[in-house]
Image (cartoon, rainbow, N blue to C red):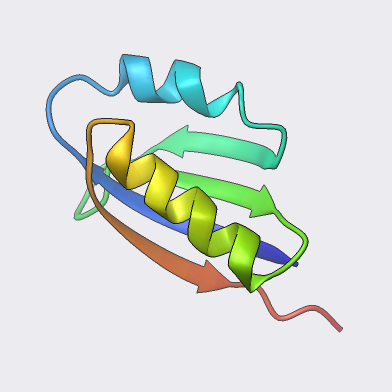
Length: 74
């Protein structure tokens, strides 16, 4: 399962961008201009793993808000 995670962060995004590279499930991460600060493309096994990743990003990084968009494959 693939998904995009849109993040709103506080302050400098450098640290979170570095930490995202340490997650094996992260395929891409990019800084944005607009309502969201970072977009992350991930590949996970299931919705449970996706939920755990979202919670980890919110609890262990300067992310204030995360929105998940699951990619329809087929």
